[in-house]
Length: 217
Image 1 (cartoon, rainbow, N blue to C red):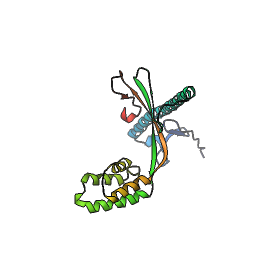
Image 2 (image 1 turned 30 degrees about the vertical axis):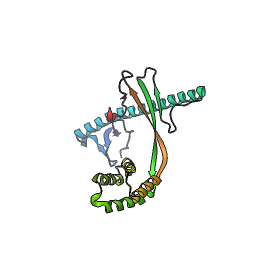
Image 3 (image 1 turned 120 degrees about the vertical axis):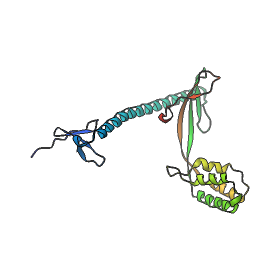
Image 4 (image 1 turned 120 degrees about the horizontal axis):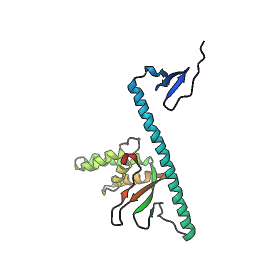
């Protein structure tokens, strides 16, 4: 009986068993490479090549972000030590700029929020208003309400549309109670910090974002 000699999978996805090449399929089965279509092997090779660069770039961006946060933190600490002052307002938003005004780094802190059960009370009151107003209600208000309470692709309430409801000036007492219920439903669960980079040719020019997001590059 022949002993099975199994080698560790290589970076190209090929595993050798007794000297013969196999590749694992999506179900975990090992298939002889000779039985795999040439176009599937070429696709596999292309994806692995792209992913190698993608993972290296992702790691580089993560290191860059870490260095950026550390450098800004060190500057903030020095400023606080030397002058007893700090950059930014109460929410933690900060802007750092070069002397010539041609480059800046902006740190923005965004609150992470969730909505409590009061939101369902608000929805009931809003539905009452829309039902009673029916023909009188403007279609744009109905559209905003529909979008606000439709969940987005992540299953979350559409926050931007919900906040648009709070900006509408409607005198109906039920509407006012609904808006109060929405405000009471909001709970800040944490915050997330975003770092953005900008440059321009001169102080008179508009700022241009230095894009790191590949989708916007």
